[in-house]
Image (cartoon, rainbow, N blue to C red; front, side):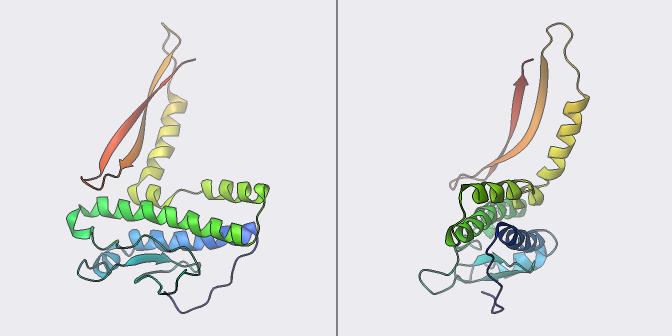
Length: 191
């Protein structure tokens, strides 16, 4: 991991800022720097991890050797699936695991510094107010905004007073034995 020490967050706001910085670094790796990231994830190398740092940078590296590690570790071996999947599916898979890691790190700090119920709830709400790495990488953020506009513009069926609206939540079903499958969810809204 990176040799530059980062200050340890101790308040909800500091933990959230740490989360946002790490998230920004991961998003940069999976979008802006995607070619560089792809090249660094050589399947011929050992188990690699994608790390995001509070200063909005990222790094592909081996996991830390200390046991237990200072912080929770990101998904191990992200490089092995690279050549066995389509690039967008592989990036989506790494994004999902990155979201999981970000939550793990944030709540590790919360536990370490004794956040109570209200602080944990506030942190969770702050995290939920920003799109996930997966949503950004797959473009689902834009779909959610478009969906809200279309739902506001839809009208009720005059004959029954019911409204049928189609929701295109792209849900990635991760099955280790097959390629990821994109499913479309439909919702039926009754008055």
